[in-house]
Image (cartoon, rainbow, N blue to C red):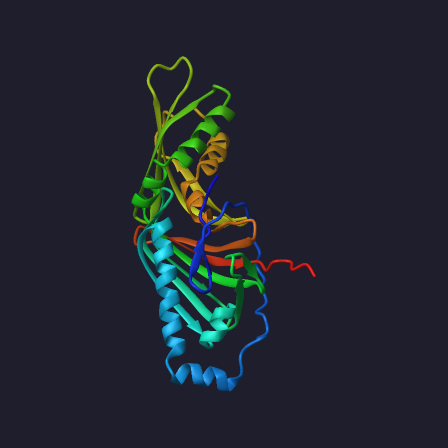
Length: 287
């Protein structure tokens, strides 16, 4: 399944990759500063305006390349030590914010991704090959609405998830449609399904909260609100979390070269708030 890793390359380019991730990477260590230009060089770059100009150029290029891969309103902030350090891939901080974002039919109302450490080091050679010289830890925050999730649930990738669960059901049931609403800071998940020899499609309405469990976002304290549901509660729980659209959406940050730790999830003002850390792992450089 293709998902988005919204990470950056210094000198002005953003990459999106095929992904698979390891969750619950909870510890990271900021790298020591190394290879920076002299204090005089950094001072000169600052007073001449070269540093600020280089930051603005890089921010504009990053934003332009994001727009090639995603829809939404984006802002980029980049702080460097000097123009020379930035060209070498050494920088102080990076922050990417987005509103009303759509990448490959995964929708998020707002997100904020920013570096944690005061020194970051990503090298980009003349052929645009990226080397992560030091681990790059970042924090992220997501705001996702019920409307966002319903849009995501109509995507081809999510419908493929439904096809998978229907196949695993072995003909005992077939999920025909899903819908989600958020009211009074609770999720209402509406699931329509068909059962063999039952002419009319069945509908179940589930009320649930959210929790982080083993690094994944899960439905918590689920309650069935209608009495005509024919599947057992234990089967419902496994099916519901398998097709959980929120877990599906947040994992756009996963990557085989990154480790994701979802820390908190809550529903506030009928919007879902998610935060955590993601660490872009340094490459093993062969001597």
